[in-house]
Length: 401
Image (cartoon, rainbow, N blue to C red; front, side, top):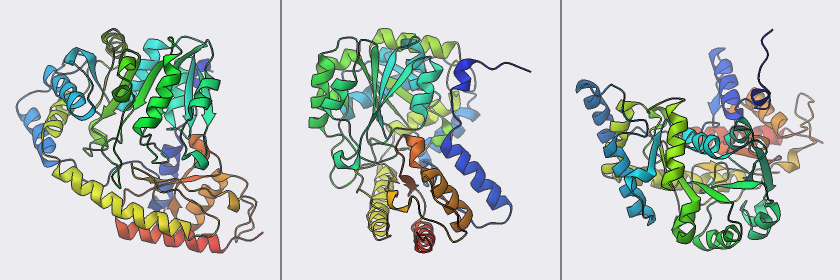
């Protein structure tokens, strides 16, 4: 028998991917399944990016590139950080990777030694803790609640820091909650970070462009410029430019750290896809009219969905600031029984029941470190969303004590 490493045995399979796989199995068997489990825009990649990708193929731009990305794209990303975020960024402070996830993984592998601690507020994106474990670090999960809009407080951060703490991971707007930190909230966290010179901040801004109701996006280094040399800012084209499958993420940070991350990438995947890089370049330099249409559509869906969820008995949901997720609490359903007599012992059982009985695929909150919740993605057409919510409402009505 082949012996697997300790590090891989600590890692859990992705909950979102496993739910998606089960939904696909049921769909293949003939079941009518609605999937609200995947965090993927339902809009097309912008025309300029598609055409640039085709042109790159036709022009033979299909060979290896520099490991950290083509110079033109690194420069465009640096300009984006300067223009949109007020970060004094140069091209040599930019790394292009095969998705935002690889950027974060590169950072962890470049920074974290065995036993180093990484503070992760919960709810968190599902991959954060497991990537820390792969780097042989120790995830330190700090729980937040709806009472604080699922945001880490300065007091919580201060209490979680130890001499072994190396990194704080924050995500705003959040996957799965959609909540965003204000500039003032980030300044207050910065006051704590400032007191601990060993602490680096990783700011995952992947949903930066998808914000609603006049929410003004802010990123950590922007409001704490003196901490820029201890901050790595992550972003990419997956969400705002609807380019999930193209796999282009990017980040900026101190030159020395970006070079170390590039070294990790050079010994793992080498350069990101050349064709995708040229498409991403066109997306970043092109018009944003398609983005504006998408955000307006998500805003309308969000308004309808949150109101609809809060009308379902036993479900409570905050109004998110951005992204395209709703994260309702379903604690009141725990301990109840389904029409088949099954007891709903946890949020995993709730999601399994809704998939098997109602034909709606959702993700349990425990996958995000927040048991008793479930995540809805509203990156689907309005009529699909309405059908899914009606199915959930009918299933909830069948529960009994």
